[in-house]
Amino acid sequence: MSLSDLNVSRETELRLRKFIALFDKWARTINLVAPSTLGDFGARHIRDSAQISAHCPAPMTWIDLGSGGGFPGIITAILLLETDGGWVHLVESNNKKAAFLRQAIAETGARASVHPIRIETAPAIIQDCDAISARALAELPLLLDFIAPWMDRNGNCRAFFHKGRDYRSEVEKARGRWHFDLIEHESVVEHDSVVLEITGLSRKIQ
Image (cartoon, rainbow, N blue to C red; front, side, top):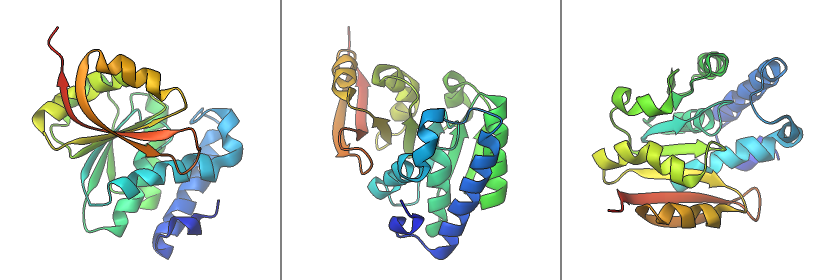
């Protein structure tokens, strides 16, 4: 995939290229993503992350959980530079990965800040957001546990989770404990994958 396929400005494309170069450098020494996915870096990671912004293009305050190698959080934060606002809070408890994220922000100018904390403690530190993202982090029932505090505070909050071919079983498990509205966005990268958009989250009374 060429970065030009993303239909972004030349400045944003240059920032994405800076990020790719930095990622390649750091990935030689720390495990930022699964090694088996490095060969198709552009399609698998950049484009997969960028599709989130297509579903939620307005400048918003984001929380990206388990940001790791920067997907989708850093990509979202770079694409926000095409708008007149917005911010991404990157939550990553691994100190080495958090250091990488800070360097990525410094070199690309991405609209983001890094929080080297556990996800469970994040709601007490990051009070409000408009949207939440996570990629390759956990099954949907646990993700809903993580995001519930922010969803309770903001009834308009939206969550976006990348999921693979087995996502339906995760949705079924989650519906045993939660009420939520769901939109399944077909992935632009893999035909049997989706981006799940969650709104209206509330816990079922047992």
